[in-house]
Image (cartoon, rainbow, N blue to C red; front, side, top):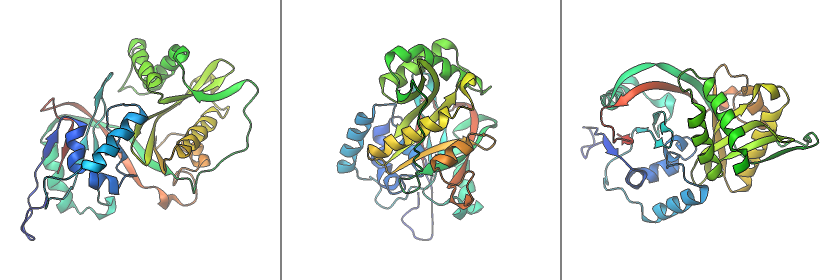
Amino acid sequence: MPGLNATTYSTIVIQHDNADGFLKCTYPTLCRREVSAETALGVLPLWSDSDSQRFLQNLERSSSSPHRNDALDLVLSCLNWSLGDYPIFLWTPRRPGALPSDWLAPRITQLTEHLRMCREPLYAAHFSYCEPSIYQASNAQLPQGHALRKAKPRDLEAVARLCKEFADDSVFFPLSIERARIEARELIMKAQVWVYDADGDIATICAVTRNSQRVSAITKVYTTPAWRRHGCAEFLVREVTGRLFDCGRDCVVLYVGHDNTAQRVYDRVGYAGLCGKDKSERIEDSLELGLSGLIEDTVTHGYL
């Protein structure tokens, strides 16, 4: 954070082990950049949407930074929940193209001092968004007997199976069926997963697990192999995106791998900068790194 002297700057890393303390210090800046900051704002524990709304509304009324002259430069965030540790996210309120190396390098160095045994990149993805003004509705009709709906307790085994298949596609994050059931149960209980119900057969899942006041993030879309090339994912993603707008969201974001053919699906729904002509609309790229651990196990948020 910049110091009091206008020409002399010093940076410090401040660590928080809970969302409350972290957001009390950073919320004003995160709120101003809510669309790109969803990875930082959305690390609220996987609460229900109503719980997150109450927390953020109360925080907005009471939030004040204890560092009057400090500025938020960089956020490192990670989350621990029922299935263990989430990936670490790095976010800055500055535009990626406006980050000179002499500004970024020392800050990254400070944060990486808290990390060890960094592996090769695990996942390179495009970060895309959809807003009501670019959302592409469709009059296409579902086949007879098919439905788009939130998952119910009776769907537990089917949702767990698709969660496991989704994880199996990544050699870095495999899930046993037991752990997939834990994830599925949590998603269903918190009403955070939708399904494409093909006459009783769950063909596709779509999870939304990060929400702030204006922005929601689709964090998992998967179609079981037997139902691919039937348009299931496009139907479901379009429905979920539209429902989120109906609930008052101004923007829905997602990540899609550089080589993932699902880019075409999201493009047809209206997600910016994937396969359309104007690729300049893409906000930024994302690179996920594997980390074997943190020097301080209690650290869940750090910022400069």
